[in-house]
Image 1 (cartoon, rainbow, N blue to C red):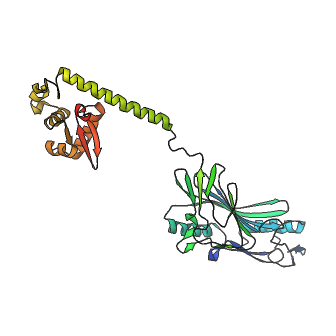
Image 2: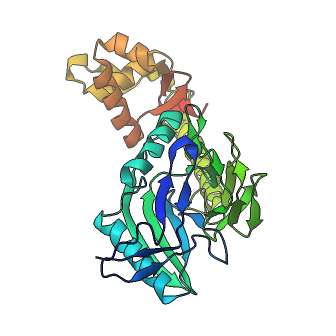
Length: 345
């Protein structure tokens, strides 16, 4: 294989010290293994940065990363050199400091600072040539990159580390772009960024402190209650309330006519009151107990009076409430249990 280690360029990808840069040593020429000369290639393209970090946010909170190293490939010799660079990196013949473990080291700092679970997935090298620019990219997916509170999406805590931030700077010739989905609106833009629609751009040289990359987005597709429109929900709640009042009033009028609490014949008592307690069902015992205590009791008092377990009483009352035999009202940390005719009073 043709070697280009001097004639092409000596590449060292720098990640130490919080940066994502490239140190380049250029030479004028070199002799390949077949005796031919390989022309030197400049690492700085005529158009755009030579290191371009692109982060594409997804609506579900992940981020698609591409750390691009861009080279001029305007001559045949430069194209050959670029192809050898790509092959050498892919085959492992050319050693770089940028790999999955290096990115996971940044992830670990973010996890330590935020206490959020994040993963690095599908890390790999990709390459392309377009308009005389050769691009060698290290790409990966960073999960749970943003956080969400309803329709607000927050970016920023992921760049923090126990010491401040793991992305401390961009050198000259470096660019960082963060692109959000088109359905996002930017509500808070970082002061160091240039905004174009949903894209934020940072051009080096620039120094970052913790919080300099903080951004707030609004997800315009977010709906608080996707199942029922709020106006329909309000109508249903009002209908339920009116129906409950009408049923309660009708029941009380029926009790006054046929006998019951609040009627002239209420003193005659309920037929269940004359039955031996041992012949009553558990639900009937609770109904008798409630009548004996004015129609309402705290759930804890029912437990104490029946000497049943909390679990048994809770399950029994839930079944009775579903059948309409009692009504439950949450007050503070306890439930108030009432017979239906008393709950409406």
